[in-house]
Image 1 (spheres, one colour):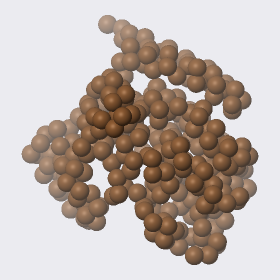
Image 2: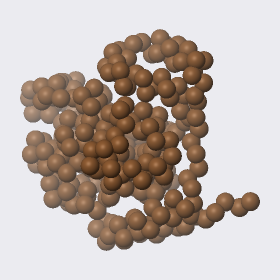
Image 3: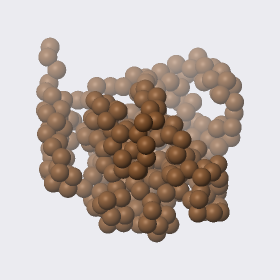
Image 4: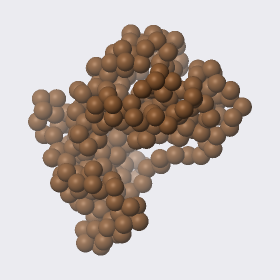
Length: 311
């Protein structure tokens, strides 16, 4: 493989923080190539990704970028990279001094709520109550209470997954501060063009190319939950992924008729939001110092979420 197609751009997370949107926006630039699948999770074995969910072997990984041609940036977006204690250094050693990193951060309280819902949808989680899932973190840290259908183990420790200060320190140490660009999910929602322009400047690219900046990856209900879990637990995911989309939809429709298990996301309980806010407040202050940004908006949002619903 030539150095012209070796990946050198890594969107490293955090999960549920706009990484899919950033991936979709960047892939539209003529001087950026992004691989498929979006999340190869080739680096960081401590994430505990199931074999069907990661691209193993260097040849297989590098083959994802053979279509990059002479594009300046060749990227991927493995969203749990930041959670790994090993991945940042592994990527830096592999990709060399030209590699650059984009990290998307979201306030951890709503991010945890969103990730738990996503994990239910993908059958990575079986505890339907967020509170039960948070209570199970200590056991999961010891390798217990892991769902039989789980495809990634480490991110099931939800609070650890969104502990940003140690994660960013690993990135800064591995790549150098100047090669790590941090954006906030709030800013992506409020000023997507501004975020895109900053990323273009970080990558030294012409920002005059305007991609479609539509909303990407909005949350929806869970349908066919039992069917999803059965596919994952049976080891058929790799085969299932090769089934034509039309046939998959028909199978899903049939499963819905049989299981009738469509679920909608529960509201975040005020007491849960308050407990998470208390846990993350010291990290929020540390993050403000690290990044030189005002994150008081997170505190304000946590305060609103912690208020009991009016009767």
